[in-house]
Image 1 (cartoon, helix red, strand yellow):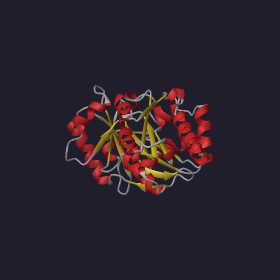
Image 2 (cartoon, one colour; image 1 turned 90 degrees about the horizontal axis):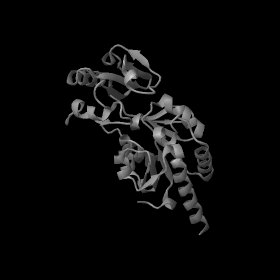
Image 3 (cartoon, rainbow, N blue to C red; image 1 turned 60 degrees about the vertical axis):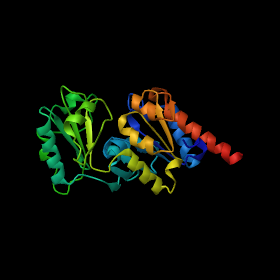
Image 4 (cartoon, helix red, strand yellow; image 1 turned 180 degrees about the horizontal axis):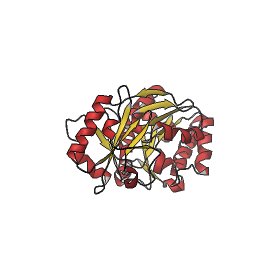
Length: 275
């Protein structure tokens, strides 16, 4: 575990971590984010959200810097929304994966997250509380087009929770990565895409070691990021597997636990400067 005074970058999940239950930033969090910006400490949101849904929140934090979306598939500039890095399924491969998922589990309801929009089969929003803005389609298999950037495939089922879908849908040798950011659906990514790989790219971008990165999250999709970081933190409301992985457990997202982490890092940096 890296000491807080050695941290040069903080990576944080959004929903259930940085944001409260209403999806907003608390006043204490806003204050510490402002202080971090003044101190030159980058804070990068690393989220499962699509780029278009993450940008408004990140622009509240500040116009500069980067955001990582779709569980690591897309890294973009906050100010412009321009993707700097994108790992996607080619359209033909995406269609083949979607068709295979439907064959493996009757009744599965599918979705496709692309750079041009989120497309969910009818009924998906009834299975996922607080579903995102999307275009309803009769069959997700027909959505991917030539040249389209499919960054994530989503799957839900009326009789099975999201985490249990992995065993039914994803098999060794498929070259797919499956994870969950909520209990309601499964997220399937192209090979090499997860939040840990994204954290390592961010460290390279900022020209620091991964041991100088602190990461905080709440759900299993955050585990690769926490395992890659020099300092791993979980909010108190985190999934048990995330709390077990963490070097420290912060107050919950409703108590603005990420603000505590930022304050800890900033205080340690000040003490190092003055010592």
